[in-house]
Image (cartoon, rainbow, N blue to C red):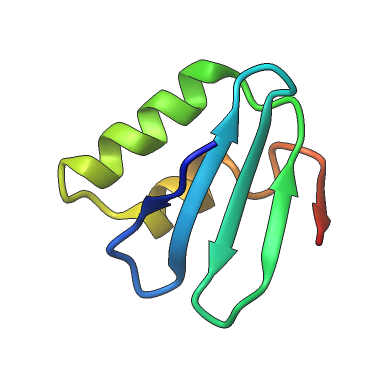
Length: 73
């Protein structure tokens, strides 16, 4: 799993494991969270949003936060 840098005020970087369906997000303040059972389609849309210069934070708040089980690691 390679990290993808997010040009975001809140999110530093993220990576995804398609086998375990875990999306790992590192926030600017250093906290790292794992989100479980994230479909590949959500990851691809998140990556596309970031790569096109869209808001990573807005996508996170709308499509990830509160939608999946998570754990701080």
